[in-house]
Length: 356
Ligand SMILES: NC(=O)c1ccc[n+]([C@@H]2O[C@H](COP(=O)([O-])OP(=O)(O)OC[C@H]3O[C@@H](n4cnc5c(N)ncnc54)[C@H](O)[C@@H]3O)[C@@H](O)[C@H]2O)c1
Ligand SMILES: [Zn+2]
Image (cartoon, rainbow, N blue to C red; front, top):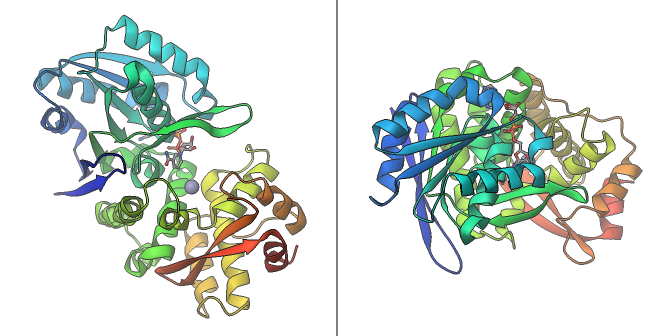
């Protein structure tokens, strides 16, 4: 049993592809990819990190071979520090040595680090080679593999260099989630809870239920649908896509306060969503009871809801967030579970809003 979602996106030219979600899909990845490329596509280079390589590269490689692809594999050390120009350059050289042409394919197999780096390499190598996303973390399956944002970090900032570049197909095998460490799992759940909060009350309800492991494919289908809907309407983040930043302006500030070391992105976003919703509910902008429902759900999934960071410091860090447009800050508010809105605030209004 699996779901196929159809993405139709693009400003300069229309572009569409499928996202397939379900169990036992790695074994079928070769066939699925074959269906998404032309007959001329001979080679497939798998790009992955060392942890995922040990777990899943053999099964994907065998499947690609069965579907008639010549395969090669590029493995780099797992972790955010690999999402950099050094790995990128090594990958370009690997693609050159493998004599990859524009009619071949690059397969990103792994979490968001693999997906972002590989997507950016695919966007830029030979001015664009087709690529496939096979996300293996909950965050990558629900968030980073959808929407076409690719990139690498530089010392000036995370994701500072990048491109919008869409894959030819996304394959989410939910069985891969079974090997995730608990903290990596919770990290992805925070983004799914976010999708429920901003767009899908039913999804939020499912996440509050007791045991939902058997509902994971359905939960992912709903969560990915939220991201697709938003991204289709606004690929380049001019308006609607900003709603995906719910909890993120404060979340990024909390990550920075913790030197990006002592807290995961998902935990920081969880705190960001909780703080904003606590304030907006007190100000009468959010339906009563929402804060409690949100924080109960976050706690249930071992996500934090408070931070010891002084609000004044967080406010100052928020002002440096790259998502700001001009002098204003776009604050995403959850009106009630499943519904959100964007409020443009001046810096002074935002300071007063936070009580900083
Ligand atoms: N492009 C976007 O729109 C977007 C959106 C959100 C986040 N991101 C980016 O995503 C990155 C974070 O992604 P992530 O949380 O997936 O981190 P990650 O890719 O570093 O993966 C986390 C850890 O889990 C391991 N792992 C991956 N799959 C596994 C599996 N199935 N079983 C066991 N271990 C596994 C990895 O080796 C790694 O150690 C960040 O760089 C962030 O900037 C991008
Ligand atoms: Zn996020």
